[in-house]
Image (tube, rainbow, N blue to C red; front, side):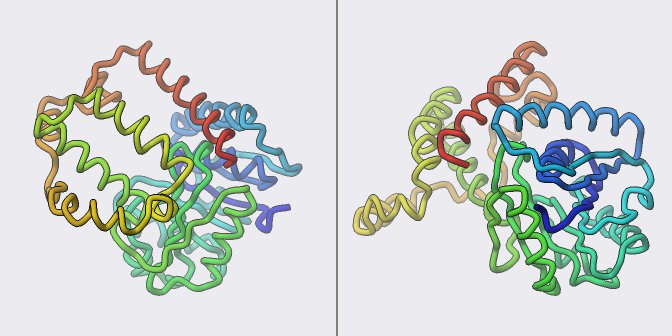
Length: 307
């Protein structure tokens, strides 16, 4: 039984529908908010898709869960016991809507931000109750990746942290509590460090794009899914790590800007799947097929590693 029964998800976008499905499936009454009827229609379709994926994962359905859709902030927040903000990554916009949220909820209601990098301290700076704000960073797709980062701000209360962890545990996910704020938190910092080295190797002509992906997928990717970094260090041995790191670390990329490869693609308007071309080319059919295949693969992997 969940410790919170009424949860508002403010902003549907890319991740909101999947988050809503996870929460409703755990027995919570979920209100999904967005500004337009068109956005809410897309959210309904996304919610149904996420629910189907959770069916394939055989995620339990707790009685009492439901979802509704609202285009009014006041209606969406009415009776909410816990609020999850999932609007675009713009600090000024977040500060503006949080001030509005405070007008419609009690002083003890937590507002958890799904930001992927903006500190809770900055979001809450001008609020009457900054202690209520905490980062609750879901991974995308949120209905498939069962880890959520919890990042308190400088004035976040222990009650807000505890409440956020309770929500995460109640949906059967793993909370990852950070001890302090850092840009990008943990997941994105590790991901972007990997991306930087991968792109440096491509920029320098060491390896082709397809071969780079092959190497990471079946080299470290496959391994890290089962044996994560800290455990891998113990398995390999500190002496081996020290010997290799002593010469390799100084040769790794320390690029402070953006890869030449990426810069050139952006200049050409090749932004990836959204423009049907980035590092690779895509048709509409290929995009649909890739999304379906990757979703199914993530389901299989999650089942295999016991998440």
